[in-house]
Image (tube, rainbow, N blue to C red):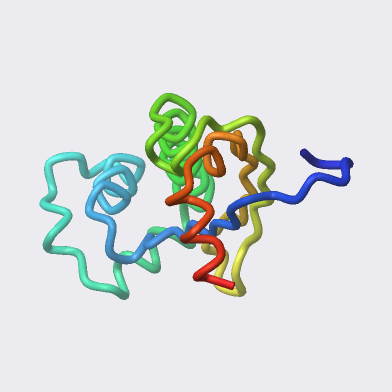
Length: 126
């Protein structure tokens, strides 16, 4: 966990595909007062323009997806092969303002190492 000597098990990167996520285009159109417009009709330039006008909408929508990811990984042990004990993340913004997340995840390591097959996989990987 952060600040301890234990090693994290997984390092994740989660990028916002804001130019291609259809739901991002939809919320940008809603913010722009055009809720009935088809988001498939927006080209990349119109999408970029809306992102520049409404950066908070993009950031908030990204956080909704991040929270859904965290809820998923905390509730389903099979995601990482063990129960998530702790996690830490940092969100950064690319030059054009698109958010992305770096996350480290600690899982119950004992569950990973409690079978001969698991030890053999680790030995083979090294």
